[in-house]
Amino acid sequence: MYDPKEALKTLNFIWSHSRGDYVHLPFRTVHGAWTENPIGAEGVTATDLDMPGCDTYFSPLRFDTVGRKLSDVGSPGVLFADLDTAEPYGLDFVKPNLVWETSPGSMQAVWLLEKPTDDIMLWRETNQRLTYALGADKGGWMENKVLRVPGSPNWKRAKDGVPAEGTPASGYGYYLDLQEVHDNLPPVSSGSAAPEVPSVQSREYRDKLLAESPLPLSMHYWLRMTPEEYQRRRKPDRSFLIMKTAYALSKIGYPIEDALALIYYTPWNKWPHSPVTLWRQIWKAYN
Image 1 (cartoon, one colour):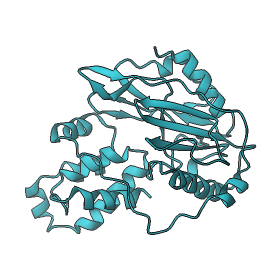
Image 2: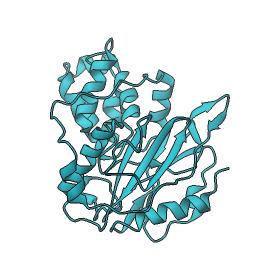
Image 3: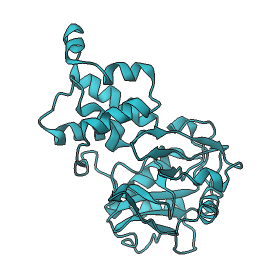
Image 4: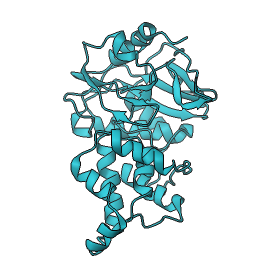
């Protein structure tokens, strides 16, 4: 049974290893509506994690402002990975401090650093190397990533109206030197392939995202565009629109799988018969 108070203890423990004034606790309704939720790092309560009927997420990093862009990041004191089905203990020299199951067979993990770092680019490269070395979700290493609150219900994996069970975090207790971890992980090839394309959600799911997600008005214009409007615009460059929109969605921390659903049904989707190609372009923009 999910206990928001116990979950808060885990999150506070993770956040205590980084510096920054804000954390993020976004949530998504069962209908797919995504809500950003920046909160002062010292003001989070268990009530903020008690969202019946919603998937709840948290930023493992802390931020100096209410945004989740690279320029907003404080001083990271943790590494993390969205493992999916990858083995969390697959690297002998970097055992995770905290591991939790988000649904049966899918896991996420956090590694604690000896101290927060102000070298954001070293942190970025190390977290990417860690993700790739483990075989974790290759779209899940960036600073704007949010993870599922440990132990919280997973409505995205619900069956017959019953959410999948998450499990509380557990793990080890030692700390890592950031530079040492970086130097012991293999570099990431610039030509690394995108992860396998997820299933494209239905048009109805896309419509709910548009109706309930707090997206900028300019983005709504392009995402809601009809084929007739697109023709009247003299067919703007489709590749540019896909990359520009996907990049903008990544900057506001929008889930990459939902970005696929939003862009797939637009009249300027260059690859309506090849979701794999579209996914690769979106993934490239996110990375």
